[in-house]
Image (cartoon, rainbow, N blue to C red; front, side, top):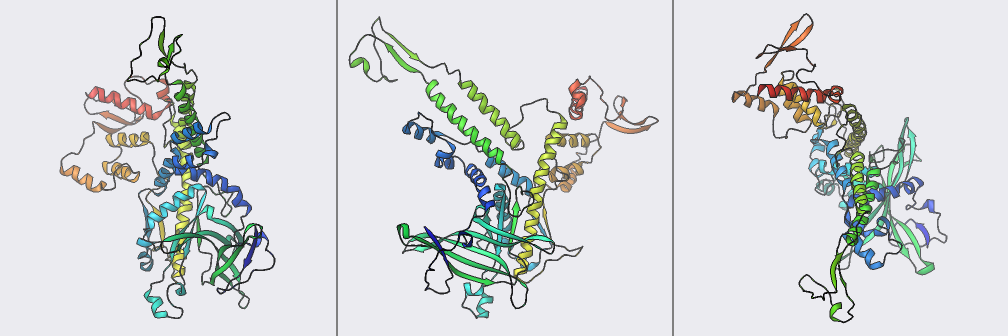
Amino acid sequence: MLTQFVDRKDTEYSLPSEPTEQQDQPSYVNAAYARMRPMWDVVNDVYEGTLRMREKKEIYLPKFALESDNKYEARCLVVTLMNAYARTVDAMVGLVVGSGIKLKNLPAKLQKHIKNIDNAGTEFEVFAREGLRKAFVGHHAILIDMPAASEVVMPGNAVEARKSDLRPYWIHKPAETIYNWRTEIHNGKTVLSQITFREDVTIPNGQFGEAVETQFMRWYIRTDEETGKRVVSWARYREETHGKGKKQVRIYVKIGGDDTHLSRIPVVVIYGDQHEGRVLESKPPLLDLALKNIEHMQIDSDYKKGLSVAGLAVPTLKSKRDDDEIKKIFGWDQLMVIDEDEDFSFVEANGQALPNKRTALEDIKREMGVLGLSLIAERADANITATERLLDSVQQSNQLMAIQASFIMAMHQAFEIHAEWMKETLPSGEEDAFEVALGLDWTEIVRSADHMQVLLEMAKEDFLSTATFLEAAAKYGVLPSYIDPIEEVKRLKAENRVRVSRFEMKSTTTGPQLVDKATGASQTPGKVVGPKATAKADRDPMKQRTKLNASDRTKET
């Protein structure tokens, strides 16, 4: 098929005599896109789940060499995906956003657009969360566009344009729709100088039907020949196919375009895992988990196939007779009468290999738990140390902190562009600067039940106030959002439920000592009293503390 490009300014056009080169087409796919696309397909397919796996069975559930078509189809129809990947991504989004997105000092003119950020009825936070979720393929773009007055009302009618309330709106642009792009250095920063999106537009077809039309939208920066200034412009192309067979020609027709007053291309990018700081280059942060999820599904399919053979008993009759009666189908609702020299029994395979498959499935579950940052499956190792927990926590928070930082930056830039479309500016003073804040502070987050237990024990022994403990529980998502810590403390006092510690702190010549009010026994804070702790507990302060508290509670009882 030949490919040609024409610039259509009206409904009539003629085909150029020679086809253009591929790099001159809006559908050109650059090398970075071609390299990343296979990874995007894997994580997107796994996120979609079981039905997508069955739909693409030739890729994810290959047919065995001697497997018949009927048995292959039957095997694919019963396969299921335990979608650890999708649950992990959704949990990650919740961890990054926390209790919500807060927009501080957003101007009133922009504030009224929050309830309908995409001009299609979607609230800002819902839209932003979806963009963050899509960024787990590697990256996700958001286009902040604004319709021209000519697209809504007749050109030149300023009164009607004001009545139509033209305003910026946000559009999701998944990574797989961004075919090509270019960057440049401007004012010491690497910025986009061109970007092209593919759009599949649904158009009416007949009285009731519809058809899909492929279009490409290009945003680019050009230099004005008269003023020498940078101008941000856009152009839209429609893909058309003409002719048949070898004479078929694909044409890209320019159907619109204009200049804008913007200072930059109105696109922001959320990165899941940016590749070496390059613009629009990334990799899925949980690709290994997605691949492990596919492996689990494949082994589970093998395991179920084995069960269908080795897990069923086959009725068998040993007999020398050779008549039609003895060959009839055996069923649970039928009685079979046999002679004395005949033997009826059930035969089944020993299935010695099935336990190995089962063990492999459990191993993969544990591996998915590690790859999914312990959000899906618990670690089976009961002897995990506090140091290991800390290292896992640091690794997790670093990854999520980078995603969170990218998300906040993208949202801030999006509102800057939104304001620029409206010829407004966001406040930037020290006291009233616009800020995008999340309900979760990663510098102080606690994700371990052990840590919350330590805070609880500190509150019990009066090293931490009840109000502070409740505030911490609320901050880290343990306390439901409808419970106000300050109000809760007031209620406790009103109910006369103020707890009195059985310990008091006293200063001595050897340092501070905890004194038991009931027995008078004293101890140095942090040292073990009561039964000796085990060697492992001695090395783990949290286990040491737990044993101490258990001993104390036993004495009180």
